[in-house]
Amino acid sequence: MKKNQDFTSLIPALLYAKKIAVLTGSGISAESGIPTFRGKDGLWKNFRPHELATPAAFSQNPKLVWEWYDWRRGIIADKKPNQGHKVLVEWEAHFPSFAIITQNIDGFHQKAGSRNVLELHGNIWKARCTKEGTILEICDTPLKAIPLVCPDCRALLRPHVVWFGESLDSDTLQKAFSLSSDCDLMFVIGTSAEVQPAASLPLTAVESGAKVVEINPDVTSLSSFVDFSFRGKAGEILPQINARLKQAISKRNN
Ligand code: BJW
Image 1 (spheres, rainbow, N blue to C red):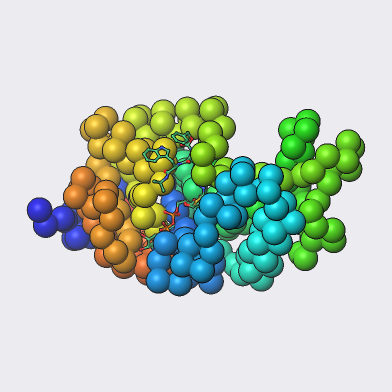
Image 2 (image 1 turned 45 degrees about the horizontal axis):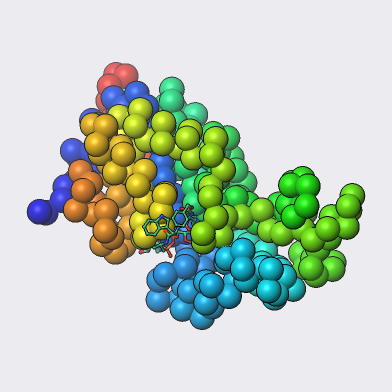
């Protein structure tokens, strides 16, 4: 079925939305220069997930895993949030109930200024003690010593991210599902929707009666379920929607 790609029909839904949830993936940071995972130049084209992003990989070779994360921290440290992230900051200030659920670990939503952000897969700037579970913020790039050890107990620290086969933090996941079932409008931006359980959130929103808007240059497995599909880059489409929204707000107020 052909999806609605018309800004004009989205604007009334956005203008009168009471509760907005946004699910983001690596595509929203692509225009900042952060690689995605599964695209043409995605990380999983050059690196094997089972060698770098599983608990077994870390047990086998913590140094290799930390080196990979150190390299990625270096890439992120040099880059800035883009227009897509910035529009979401404006929307948080405008809408009474607005939350971002991100799969990204780059911290760019918060860096742009968003405050109501749930990080499903953790944060690359944090490390966690493998013995005591203590979470530390570590901002050095490059890291001073690899692998990192806990300053308190000397056990290994690991990146505070969620690897394949690991459970997501249950409180965070519960909040994400409740935002998804409770919203009247959900934006799904820059995710292939291939990774569970994040990929189930938009389906929960659909089942709960919300309108769902996808912004992605490519078709995904979600595309056939959504109400609006905008095929393009988040850093271009979001500012266009925002400009139309502002016009509609000023028309409404006059
Ligand atoms: C643009 C753009 C632009 C480009 N503008 N868009 C049920 C069925 C089958 C399997 C499972 C299942 N439940 C669980 C699993 C196993 C697994 C899973 O889902 N595997 C699938 C791959 C099949 N899930 C898990 O293991 C999860 N744990 C879990 O469920 O625990 C319980 C359990 C375990 C095992 C079995 C059953 C239950 C944990 C998942 C953790 C994912 N971790 C990673 C790494 C995080 C740390 C790190 O960054 O190093 O998270 S993997 C990677 O994928 C990362 C991402 O957050 C995640 C999603 O990727 P994302 O963001 O969608 O990126 P891409 O590259 O896929 O897509 C980018 C999109 O952007 C593309 O569509 C582009 O077109 C678009 N784009 N430029 C807008 N400018």
